[in-house]
Length: 305
Image (cartoon, rainbow, N blue to C red; front, side, top):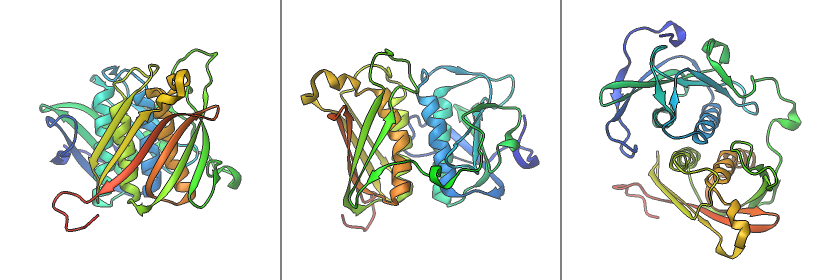
């Protein structure tokens, strides 16, 4: 199979993530080549996981695909079967992308790299990061090829105050819904005082994308909880439908929450704020869902909350 930077031979450093959904899933790593900015790796990973999450969780994948982020050029990620003749699933690729970005965070090593997944000893997929999408030639593109951005479009537009930020996002750009429905929803973030490491916020976002992936993306969502052992803290995010919203709460779906969560890191990067926070999702000014992000010390840590 093609590899990056002329690498050959089997993957090494087989390891497993403690809170991965299935303990039988393992991955091998290989780091070699150009360094990549950590922010670019995280954002392109979230973009790939977002696109995969809207598909059926056990949908078969028979070809490598490549993702780039038009607002964060300088990184690309490819994911797919481990060999041209093999077939994998969305589930395994999402798990492997999570493994890859968490491994980079834990090692503080963001560079050209390759990650191979195994389930019960069987190869089930490969993920490759590169600083140049051309190094991943021959794969299917998902997204816009990176270009030089103008200063005015280098970050998303958001009305931000000292302790909050508001933004609009497209809730149906990723999933098919009734075209007569309102596809523009609003988000509002209220930042609290306690800081959370940026990596841990991004990691819990990736994990929540996986938690949402098996759900029907068009059905109303009542509640979802994600709590993970991050790199430096336990981070929990909880989302609930707002019951007082009435029929408007039907817009609070797995699909709309996927869209909000995939966009939220751009707002945090723009505001340069990584804290505990409360988040609201609104439809025409009516709150239809509420979420929160909270942190606590890792088990065995001497830190006090």
